[in-house]
Image (tube, rainbow, N blue to C red):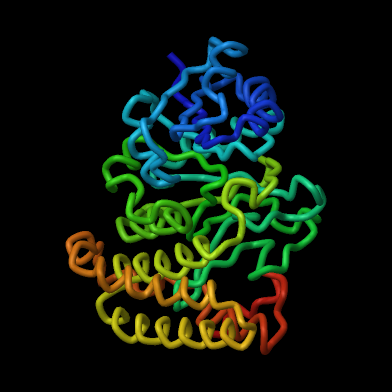
Length: 335
């Protein structure tokens, strides 16, 4: 039995499956392919079963989102390693072997990701993960190869294997034992930043995460969750939840206060732009966060020794004030 399962989470992604499933099969000879379907209504499952009977289909009864979908569906997938891959990712020949080698050789490494490049601008890193992710002191994510919305050209500058703080939910390989031991994804997140929350919990338990430069895949990006008021809501709500769950106690309340103030400023900017839906999404995000505080209090993974969770004090200052657009431009001595 193959030790790796490449699991494609699908929701009404028939056209993406037609575009990329064959490539996933051809490029992953070390693994078995699983399509995990989030109650699609576009005939996805029937098409896979008819055209690829060798592919395992796990069908859920309702759309549980990225986090809940994987949590529920992976219960039916037996493998030593899970490769979780978005349906809008084009895998490449040899992509899996370097990732698998790292986990087999590095017992303290919990998860690894390939370099994620833009499917439509193939020389550039892609927004969702690029060459591995970090956060600043307020939990704002950025990547090697992608600072906020600026994506770099891949010129081999990050080709070495490197430790990172989080791996991209678009495509990563994780030890199944640790996935379940750490409590899997937080299904409350539904989608957006759930992988960063999981990686932060792994970090708090003393595990490392890596980006592997000699593995590359291409991501369309935005195909599964387009920009909308729902995404704004999930972004702000989940960022607050993630920080509340994982911040060291000494930094918890001061950091949350700063985040709430920053969200307020963003909301005011939306008002000036007459974007009332976006403003309402932020209000809704805060209301939902406050409502969830009691339940999240039971899942805080406090580790007082991991105070240095952030790579930068403020990536917003770096980007907007100091105009540091590339990861290698960041002055690592600046905090």
